[in-house]
Image (cartoon, rainbow over all chains, first blue to last red; front, side, top):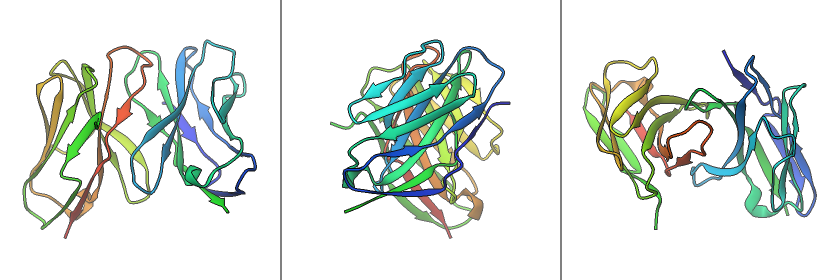
Length: 114
Length: 113
């Protein structure tokens, strides 16, 4: 069974600085997809970034980028130039290629300090 | 213009009652989901429908019954509510196909007292 681990329950960062959130996963699959979702206090789950395992290039979306290390089964999220609106829970999620199920980690609560 | 909308957003009800949560998506997707987020923020899939056909049915009590009248709607009915059913229930949708991004609604916060 696949598992997703986020080892940092809480993190904080000063506004305008950079922070990295960790995620590791366990799978025997070769093809799969990885996601980061953001859940602000409003509770809505918002997609931040998506990575296809067969693509070696790390995905980026504006200030958000990932460091995808397939051999190490690691998928960290880097947030550059942190903004107050980045304060949220961040969830790492895994989906194997033959499935439609997202398997979530336990989340990391990020606080951006002014 | 909300893409995945759920009603109600908040629901407080007594143990033993029956309640429904409705979900609609206007993204043109053909696959819809129900996820449950417990008090520790842990998210887990419950059901998924593709074109009104059930494709994922996790180990969920029989008191939970999803219904999809068409591919744009997926409702969740819960019978005989228990205290442990208190959670946030998220509806979501995607286009059918492995690895496609799943888009979530705002969640329905159910409190059973």
